[in-house]
Amino acid sequence: MTADAAIDTLRAAGDPEKASQMASYHKVDRPYLGVANPVLDEMVRGWRREMDLEARVALADALWQSNIHEARVAATKLLTQARIRPDEAVWHLICSWVPSFDGWAVADHACIAGQRRVMADLSRLDEIEGWTTSAHMWTRRAALVITLPLTKLNFPKPDESEARARVLDWAAGYVPDRDWFIQKAVAWWVRDLSKHDADAARAFLEAHGADMKAFARKEAGKYLH
View 1 (tube, one colour):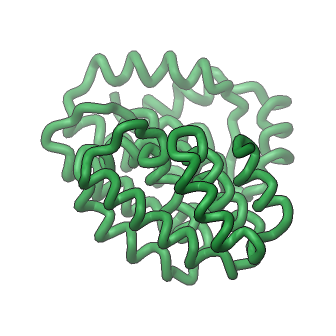
View 2 (tube, one colour):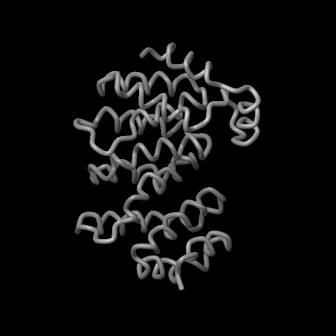
């Protein structure tokens, strides 16, 4: 499957009216074709069956570079897989996308692909930590979104507990940042953590809740009683 053929397939499945609605909703200036997510999922499943990992990485790279919304989402879906060995090329490609994040939807799809790679190798937190001081808001936000699986562990291993504490420190460092998306990301991380480690979430809010925006503090504590 070449990138041109993949994009032609996407265009054929598009709906101009839906494309216009998507452009208004996402408010990011790029081409939209109007292809629904379930249709993208089915397409990508077919492409994945046809290609080895090297070909998938190459196609994902080309689709991302097209800057078409659905092509970028498809690129992320091509790389969303729990077990990939070796996965260095996948990880490097996902990281290369981060500086070009410019909206939550595509960024979140890419981070979901990246989450699998982080949990496969927690040493990647060393690279992600560099994102936390980026001048680019979407890069800072990605450091929390891509590490969300750490919040969902009921019985974390020692290295996972250490990683969870490390990311919580990053979240604490984000609290003074008044950007809505950053505050939302902190709230999201702490809220999800509260379902699996209520004590840690409660301690975070006791230490930092007063300095969070009100909506974020409320969201973070949604499941705490």
